[in-house]
Image (cartoon, rainbow, N blue to C red):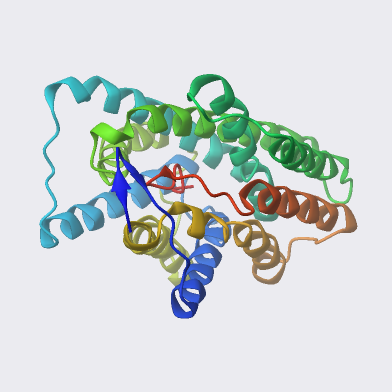
Length: 312
């Protein structure tokens, strides 16, 4: 494996690593379902604060145990503040939008982020150009979102508002991803996850204090399990596991599996939360998954070491 200038050459995943990657993507995709369960007893922004406070502690301990340096250079502070600011607004909007929509719809809409990122990278990342294949993938992704908005069954005006808020969150996520691509070579990749979580957590709790009807209405086993899942599984274990796989095999191999995330979110939204899985939703899933596959299919050039923005 060859590494240079913050980039890493791709290697083919062996069978067991591929199976584990599928498992990780399924766990990431289920996160919106866990968030919705948390909302039954916790405030919207309080949920985000609790999740990322747990994740911050877990990743911090992991970094100490594995001997990773937490130091940053003086000139990098303002860059981390920019990333942290976008992260705070992006996640606040995502949680707010999800509180008004379904987990299955939210999972589909937020997976428009890779398409936004491709479009922005074309203009802001040197050499990262939109090809005909990528253009077709982007069009398929946006066509999938159109099917989400065509859905009428059980969809209220609140759902529409929530969907639009989630789309704004996905766009901000892509802005963060593009900015991170420009600066990540000067950082240790896990810094780009740990410090935004640490810096954003107080703001999530402040939002909860100001705007949640009740920060903690009640707790039960389901809510606690859902919260632990978000903080310790997706935002901690999955991050560490994904980071480890990236170091060994490269982002190209792993990104070929990200289509599993929207599939997992839609299926589990139906099975666990009883959300309707309609024809329009299935068409949206098919188009968005196909677009993701088309964009990531047989991408040969090296790409940045760290998968951007998978904290949602």
